[in-house]
Image (cartoon, rainbow, N blue to C red):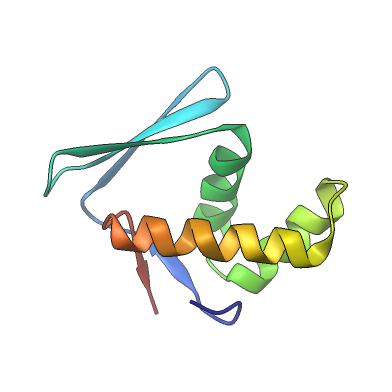
Amino acid sequence: MVLDSVVAVSDDAVFRELDGQSVLLNLATGMYFGLDAVGTHVWQLAAENGSLRWISQRLAEEYDAEPAAIEHDLLALADTLVEKGLWSVS
């Protein structure tokens, strides 16, 4: 996965937010996946604009963290969500 990737929510993914965190369900596999508050925010940003570069820039504006750390964590999360079938990449 690279920052120039664009992600989209999979047709098999169901998202439910609960008190700032979220639970995702892959309907095809029946597997659940949880996101903390930051992961939930990333999910919501991806629904708005799936460009990982754009998401990374937004996170850098909103959080007091090194851009390199944000990029690393975002790419790791994106890899996991794609692996779990919750996001697709174009």
